[in-house]
Image (cartoon, rainbow, N blue to C red; front, top):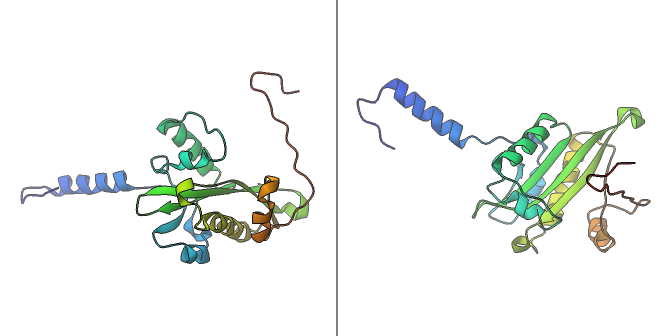
Length: 196
């Protein structure tokens, strides 16, 4: 980009505004909820972020696919879901750990904040969708994601944080400070059929 002596203030302002708009990236929630200790403990080249509006291009859904079928998404379906979550940003706190050297998502997790009547309108954090890209495993990123989500639970005022996991993952979550409590049940709804 070059400017001549005949470039007008209007042209210069328009160019600067385009740069700002094209480089602007929205965060799902305020960075005040990011745990500084987790940020410091990451290996060099990794950084903790709230989910960002351009994480589709960084391979966010590819990382999630290590958990389950993600489905066919394009930028429009991504933006629709991101915008829905952003409108409810007192509920959705999705974090990512990005490999800054490649500008790709290495790990992710979400804590959903449930607003309850019990415990005097208490809050419960539900941890979901913990995923670490296979190329980045062995670097304690899963542990860092859990620590970051627990921090968000504390900072938002939750009286407890809970999660569901496979039996084989219980030892990992116990190392993260969780303990088994009762049982998890699921009812899967077949698409296109009556719900009852």
